[in-house]
Length: 186
Image (tube, rainbow, N blue to C red):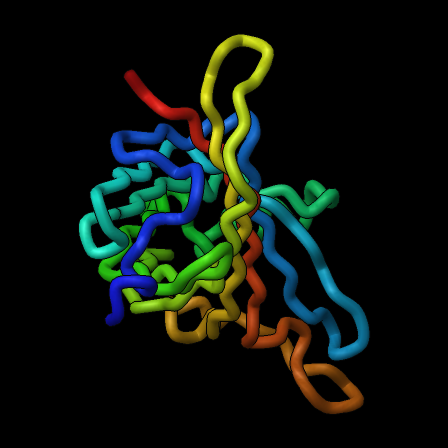
């Protein structure tokens, strides 16, 4: 990497930034019956962004709570929480831990280990740094947006149903989008 590729985004200072769960959203989109999309969200329980002097010294870790999955349909949410999908009784949390961050300006790639349903896979989140601001309560906040497309089968999420006209009920590709607000600590 060049010096530019390892430089921190303008305005992001070194130190620990706590992910503000009440102002952070993790959402997903998956094709349903081959003709429409189902959208949902999962709560981010906690997270930490530790910003070092360079991107090489910077890390991200986040925990999500799959028992909070919400798609706007209680029956579907119950099915997603069951053993057919997320099995939240057995796998009560999902995690992401970065292994590398690269990029420059406002666009970055955060590479890391995503664990869902007890299976860990390396993923690359296309990430945009949205800047920093001081809120009315004196907190310095940083904003980020990130997206990644995963194969649910790679995480052991294989339940499906065949459609009469061919194809399956739930697509394999899932788009995950994150909108993160983090507060500078100390």
